[in-house]
Image (cartoon, rainbow, N blue to C red; front, side):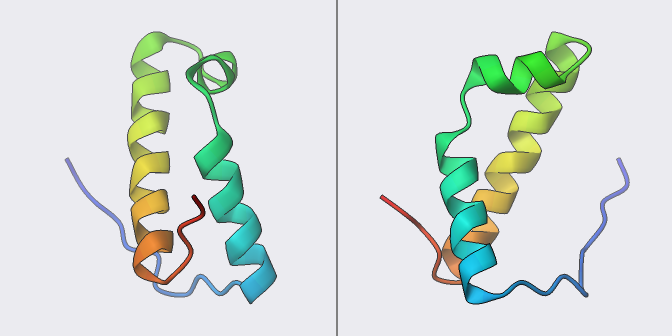
Length: 63
């Protein structure tokens, strides 16, 4: 599977914090409601998890 890297993503401090809060609060039912299938929902969940990890590495890891 081909991977991509988002090199040019720039967020303000408040945007990064708000995004970290959002990904922390997303539930399975919300993810599933946005997907056309369970498989797609799992792909979204995995991508959100990677985003959450990247934000945490940058110092945005809300409890």
